[in-house]
Image (cartoon, rainbow, N blue to C red):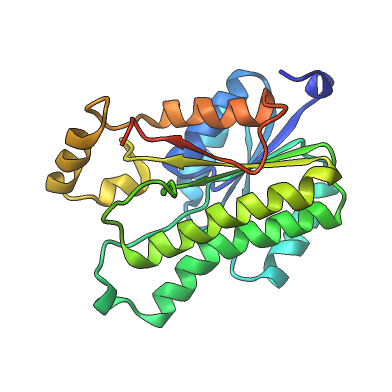
Length: 239
């Protein structure tokens, strides 16, 4: 762990009730990191994970900037974070011709807009030093058959992280993204068995990833990294 975190590190995990977010919460608590995990609608899994790990569960609505900022400020009053992990994501396995405007807006807001407003808030509150680690599902070097609306938000997120790295670096805020391949839980559970087999075939490791493996990289970026900035780290088994 970096020397600057030796005193009393504190982590927030947005989307901590999901598969990847939950694995991150477990990894942080295993290292005795004071952790706050948020949920939007999955209250029971969030409370169960909080009871299991000793993390604190917090309902957080991401519907708009005006809804998000006051909630972040209220939590900030209880303690300043040294690490914020954004594990919020949603997708739906449907073709472009079936995409509704409402679903597009909801996907955009959850996957990309909430990340933007979070970064803006952290900069405005001068939270330095701070690590922001975002999670996503598309590395820009990949060409994969993903739902178009989901892929669009992932491209936005990756480009945003690159730009944020330059703008927030001088402020003492590190910003990076972990791009995940097919995992054994989470959004990957919506894949058909045929598509999952295809991914396993094209993976250099010939298997899907585990949530715990994703959490290892995410927590390393948040607690150990000192010089990687504005980058997308692919954790995808070599696809």
